[in-house]
Amino acid sequence: MKKSGGQDRGHEYERMVRDHFARTAIFPTAKDGALNVTALARGAGVPVQSIYKNPNIRALVAGEARTRGVPWNQERHVARSEEFRGDGASTADRSGATTLGLSESALKAIHAIKRTAHRLEQQNGALIAENADLRQQVVELRLQNGREDMMIETGRRIPRPDDAI
Image 1 (cartoon, rainbow, N blue to C red):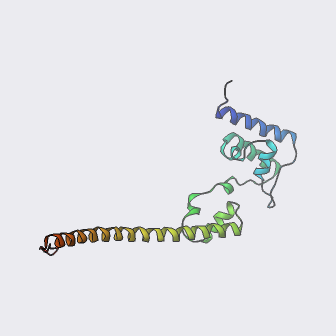
Image 2 (image 1 turned 60 degrees about the vertical axis):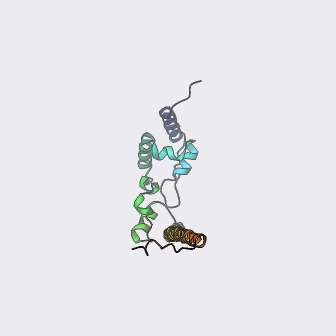
Image 3 (image 1 turned 120 degrees about the horizontal axis):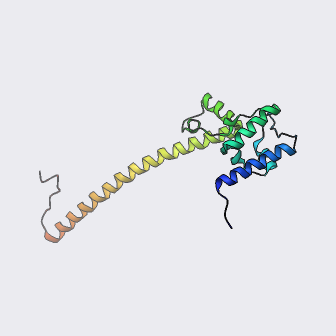
């Protein structure tokens, strides 16, 4: 039995979405009146990501949304990297999160996580520097201990490397 490839699956999903539009007059909307993509995907029986990633399905849904007068902001659900910087919440971040469809509480939670991650990165950097310093001290103490052991065994003073100059 031959497995269908990604393109075949994409064409099948496109057909399923077309069939869904043909058999239903209801176009799922969210509380804000925009297209509810999750409900649409569930009704059509396709994965939500196929609606965003398959250009044929995306065009089909955008056209149907225009025809039925339902707004669909495709950018709303696409995370942009500049909105997930490690800094605090600026007004640009808030408007970007709003276009992503995040609630104010979710936005606050994201920024709290960012602040925590930033603080932990700072602590980790300080600990790494301290660890390197302590490793150097251990090396120096082992050398000093070795010199003192030699002095005890031989009865002669072994100068430290910086005393020899």
